[in-house]
Length: 262
Figure 1 (cartoon, rainbow, N blue to C red):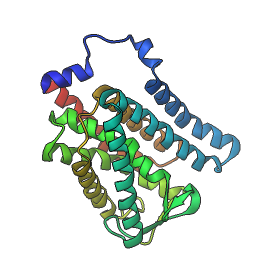
Figure 2: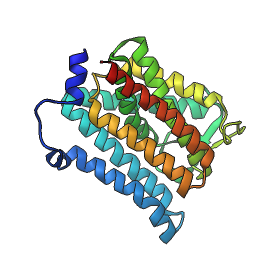
Figure 3: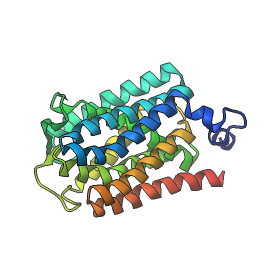
Figure 4: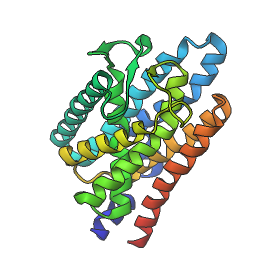
């Protein structure tokens, strides 16, 4: 396992950095980064109407980059299986959650992220797809396992840490509404228990192959950095920026320490 992890992160033979950056997966990654950087600039030029379009574009580009990285490592069959499983299962969880209040608490989506499927924006399951594989990479690096309860447990923590950024931002932008606002910048704490439970269940059911570490850890780190800077500076949300910085940062450090041990 240690040898496998080492080869995943530091291949002995392979293309140069310049050649890697010309690969489709990395081109998608760069396009995603440029899109996120452009959103506050475009908002300053054209106003808040650009935000929803920017969010959807960012979700589509990040998920495309993540799938392209997975495709290189897993092949088409496993990648399609994982993608379809995550999208269908996460939509089901979101539909149940927004309909019944379980497991996230009582909330509803607005029409701002249309189109909606069964009351759930179509972009939401794709957002699960864009961040679950990076969370799996964190767990794989941290534990040295691509299966088992420790892998599932850390995956859920790494995924849920992202929501320390996400929920306060999306609620502030009016994309979903809580019936009873909670103590975490308006978000009820049960929401985070729901994220843990749902991500644990999805990971256990999907049983993904071993994640390609180098690219997906890069994606996780990029989300951590961009969200920390974006919420703190551009979106005037220093509290969520700080908590997300610490939460995702600790997850990333656990991955780096796990790799270092091996």
